[in-house]
Structures are given as C-alpha cells and as structure tokens.
Image (tube, rainbow, N blue to C red):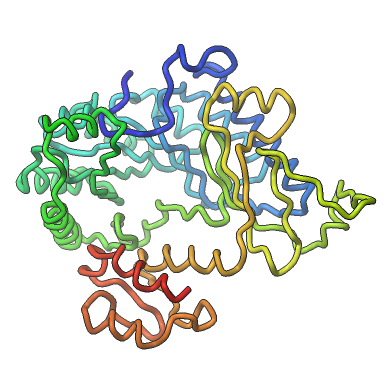
Amino acid sequence: MRRCGYCDFNTYTATDLGGGASRTNYANLAIRDMCLTRAWQEAHGVHEPAASSVFFGGGTPTLLPASDLARMLQAVRDTWGVAPGAEITTEANPDTLDDAYVAELADAGFTRISFGMQSAVPHVLRTLDRTHTPSNVEAGVRAADRHGLRSSVDLIYGAPGESLEDWTTSVRTAIGLGVNHVSAYALTVEPETKMGRKIAAGTLPKPDDDDEAAKYEIADRLLSEAGFQWYEVSNWARPGMNRATISATGATWTGPASARARTPTTTPRSHQPGHHTPTDSAPRARRRGEPVEPAGDTTTAAVRSWEIAHPKRWAQAMELGRVPWQDSETINPTEAGEEELLLGLRLRDGFDTTALAGAIPESAWSELEKEGLIRMEGERAVPTLRGRLLNDTIITRLMQYV
C-alpha cells in the first residue's frame, strides 16, 4: 500500500498513528462517531431524515475488510435510517477487491462501486503512481455486474506526459466498460506532494491549461455521443443515473478530517434540551473543538463542523465521550446563498437568478450570456460548455455582488 504521487489526502504512516487508531479498529471508531453525532443532534433539536444516499469515500475504503464496511452501513441504518431506494456507494481502488469482496458488499446492501480508474494507459498510471492495471478495472466492473451492483469510474486528465490520444483511449475505455456514470477531473498538483515536488524541481512538466481544456472537450463530446448527459461540471451519467455526486449541504460526514453541515433547530436556545442560561450576562468563551450552538433563529442557516484530522487524536476525543470536532462555525443565510451560487453554477439544473434577494443585477447575467458563458432557461442560468471551462471566471464576477 502506498499513497499516489499526486494525493494530498489525510494519510499517515503506522509510526505517525501510534496507538489509538488503526485499520483494525477504524470501523468501531466510525460507529462511535455516528452515535456521538446523533446524540448531539438530538440534544440540539436537529432532525436528520433517513439517508437517501450513503457514500464511503474520500480515500480507499476497500482497504478495510468488506465486513467492516457492512458493519458501518448497518450502523447508519440503526442511527439515522436509510430511505427505500437509497444509493449506497463505496469508492474502491481496482486492485483492492475481488469477486468475494464484491459479493459481500452486495449482501450488505451496497448498490454501487465507484472505481478509481484514473486512466486506461499504463504509462499514465505509472506517472500517477497508481498500483492497479487497466485489467483490474475491467475485472472489478465485471464482478459488480455479476452481483447486481452498478459501477462508475473516476478519470483524471492532465497528467504529465499524457497525450490527447492517451486521454481519448481512457475515455473510450471507460465508456466501453458499460458503466452508467463517469467523473473526469483535471489533475490538481499540490506543492507538498511527491508530484508537486517533482514539478517544482523541473523533472516533470507542469499541467497545461489549454491541454486540460482540450481534454475536457474530448470527454464531453465522447460521453455525449455515447448517451451520457453532463449534470455537474465534472460528472456525466446515463439518463436517470445522476445521483452519484452528493452535495455536502445538508449531509452528515464522519471520520478523521471530514466536514459536515448542519441544519439547526428553530427552537429557541433556552428551550433546547440541556440548555442552561447563565446567571451572569458575560458569555462563556467557546473552547476550540467545542461545537457552536445553533442560534435557533433566522440569523443561522446551518452549522458546519470539521472533524479532527489526526486519527489518534480523533479516537482520543471519542474516548472522552465528545463528538470529535476540530472546530465548527455557524453559516448565516447570506453565506448559505453564496454557497448555493457556487454549487448551482456547476450544475446542469443551473442557478435561480431571482435568488439572493436580487443581489445580482440582471445586467450581470446578460453580459455572461452575451459572452457565451451561460444560457438562460427561464429564470435559471445554466453554464455552457465554454462556461464550464471558465467556471471560476463566472463565479469571481458574480461574487462581487453578494
């Protein structure tokens, strides 16, 4: 097991971890995290509906035994419930599972596997420090087919040394696998990663914006011709199969370094379970890591928190009986609206231009439409292909108004 050269995920060596957190007890700790989170929600009047989607990811969950994933999924059912027809997904490196593993996932109730394919070209996989081969991807998808699970694949474009022909091969191979969902992401190079250091030293070329734009257009064209529809800037799906990308808004995430958003209670704080009104007027300072209190009025749209990143300290917090939050913040309605803008302009459904209390003038939308960056569908602004390529430009121009 090794970390890919471009990866900046929250990873540690066994020495870094020390005692208190490891692969062998991760599932138990994650289940404890769920229980503590649920207790916090109940104490603060937060109603969490049954999950309509459950996603294991942000790393390689399939490094754990399938039985651990099954136990964690059952804990979600026991803690919040899972809605009928919910999509239940795990990410997987293609070389970390076999037919027996997939069968166990199917028996546990998983409905989809998202394979980290990244490329179908061996030399590109080597550049990315991937450990799997193209044949591993096909074997995984076929195993999922046999056991009635849907499959999706993630691709990365812009790797050093990847030609347009290489990228075309990868997209065509993904389509040929018969999957119903494809994600394609431009390579992001972080300076502290192995790849980032090589690029800084000049031993690998830096990704080129024009090259990445050309590859995005290739992906969009080939996927569209194959019957896929784009529904988010980096995601394409066959009709009716676009549930794979989850908005963090309103979702609950658990695990080291994860983030979650909360919808607070509308019950006044003085009526919340366990609330104590201090006798003196001076507010008590909130300790770092202590959850903020939802305001219980129109000044707060949500509470966002993020969990302790280091697995050992994450585990130690739960040993003390507290939700393992590193810190948290309240989100006011204006900030929530800004986040809706950021998300909406990445989606095929677009953004309602009448939202944000009309803060963005009609002229701003008209200019974007004239420049071919959006098209108006009624009162919704939908990014064009050019707008998807220049999404950051659109956002920057609109954010000055909100």
